[in-house]
Length: 158
Image (cartoon, rainbow, N blue to C red; front, side, top):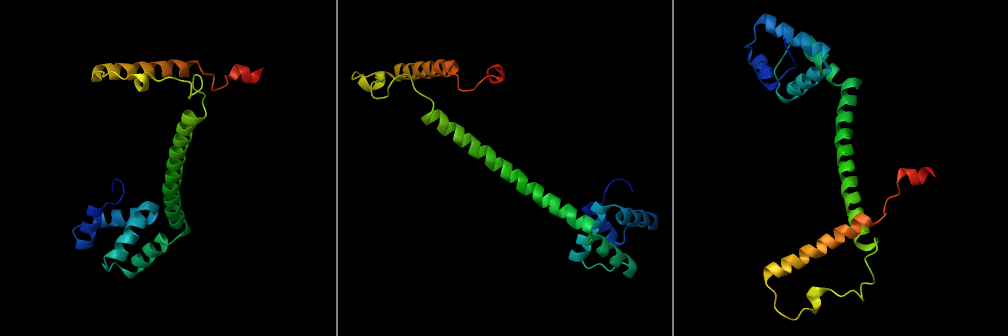
């Protein structure tokens, strides 16, 4: 038998469609492979096909072994850890966003800062408004590039 047990092979085995050599190879592999023993054990618990008594007991015992239970626990813990790390990333992104919005100093006092679009009483076209907004974003990015938010390694070493 090449590879691990799959659903099709389990169904063929349950229907008695495997040759004696294929069945022997299939069962021998399930006897030494924890992954396949677990799949076969789950299949036997779902579909009550009657294998030989010795084989059924051996497979069920193997599927309940400490190695199989440990593998299940590791897979479940791995999913939980991925969810935890994803949550940390989202929380970090939120914290950085709030930091940028509220902590990093703006150019001058906000009350004294005069926004051109608030003082402009004449009607402007959408193109002019977009250009003004683009200019403001460019100014912000230039200011942001000049801020020394992070300390360089050289400064830490001094």
